[in-house]
Length: 146
Image (cartoon, rainbow, N blue to C red):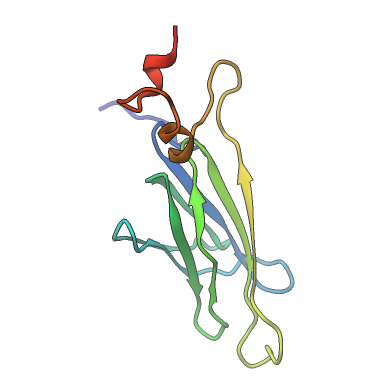
């Protein structure tokens, strides 16, 4: 049985979403429940964070309209706004949750940072808006390459 190493990059044809759930001191929060959903696609991917608060979804269908929800027992929940997952790229979220008992007026914080894991050179990514503007009636980019 062949064994392949796990790489921290998005698989071809997909995007990826990952990140870390932390407390206000910057320590990873274990057992955080992370849900990545897209209402338009009808998808929902539930993940449990590691002992260090890390979560990762390596094969996400590229599209706009994704929402990330994070919850953990005894902590405030957090929800992102809608975002787009581009083909071949990883979005990384750093999320800080506050304990419910000490939260007061503190709001949970989440920041998104795009990570380009694509090899540089002749490769380029094109979102659906760009592809739909191509002159080809079949909307295929490979027809435009000499």
